[in-house]
Image 1: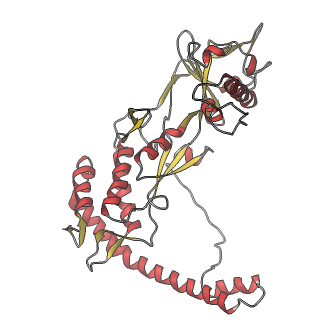
Image 2: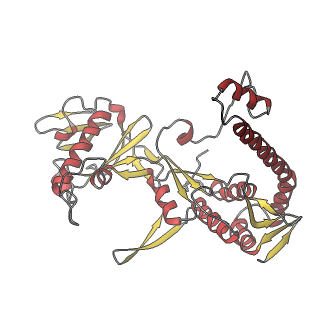
Image 3: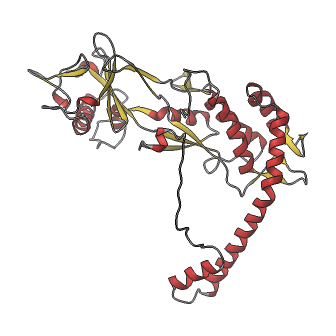
Length: 386
């Protein structure tokens, strides 16, 4: 393997090229500053980390020996806890702990929803996960057993109207639960009309409205609504109206789909779900993270004999009932999980020739790459909003 000397460290050619040619040129950080910082962190943390790992080994050996010594005895919980305290594995809890955080995105601080974990080395999977912020309820129920599948419903390649009708009925029940009407059911609506800043909902021979008018959050389409945005507890549903579509043409209100806000956040995983054993593997992971932070990551694949390209979704735009612009995130909030502090990597060699701890390298490079997101122009789609 070929390395280049940077400060007191040796950087693998593949990683050095990636950092100096792809990551750093668009940032206010020159290579000398970056590698000087990495060298400083190595000298400050690596020996401490080694000693902590040695302490962990010592604790584990004492615990293993305790179990060997007591294998023929009934388990004594109190004695075991005393032993763990005596060796320093358990320590007294502090009486008062106060933690205050600022600049935390709503997806972490205030909203509750699914979080995905995806291998960062697979660009297509990473893009799918980032784009899972919004998904079709119709598709989710139609193609899975989340709604019981009756015999023959999914046989063949075409659309099954019987299955589709059951899916629509089930999703209307969900609407009745989370967005109830003053009277009547979503199953019976024949039209959705904006009446000023209110939503008028037509039934066969009468008109109704949302029991909670404030759940009407926005719309697209003028004069006729094509997309209706509803909100509940900070999360949203989008009702798509397209009477000319296959699904909408069978619906009394012309509803063709209902899109739910779903995966609020995604962990882009550099650790358990991937195997990055050398510098080239690390660069693959870092390059995909760079593409996600810049917003230009793509993945091309073949489907039904045609090449398709997956890319990050853009934010979703609506008008509020009062006519103001409403912008909702089109992507899940992307987090990154770095490798822990046990493993080392041949991507960087220390002054003594030993491998640098991988978690230290991940922490510095993934943070460096994230600066690309923070430096985007105003109005551009950003990952973190804080």
